Length: 92
Image 1 (cartoon, rainbow, N blue to C red):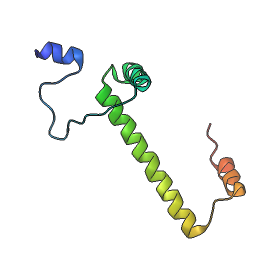
Image 2 (cartoon, rainbow, N blue to C red):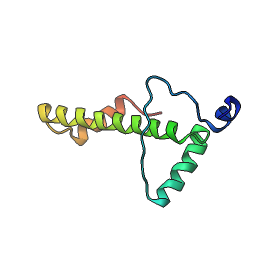
Image 3 (cartoon, rainbow, N blue to C red):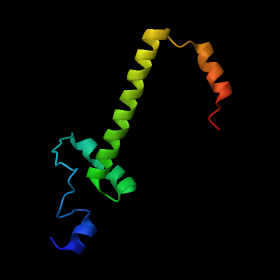
């Protein structure tokens, strides 16, 4: 594959030392959605889009794990505590 074509298609001849190839399968309807999302966010680079989605999922799972541990030690966070947080740290 020529260097110019590799850049145009988002495919590289040489993988970086920290990348590893992974094969995945999705149902057809999901494939189309992933392709559209990758086109919008990653210039059509499905690998980049999936890597970002995986990082986000891992971040969310880490947050859920922390919350479970916190509540196991301190008790369930109450609605009143959540309301107090919203007052102190409004979103915008």
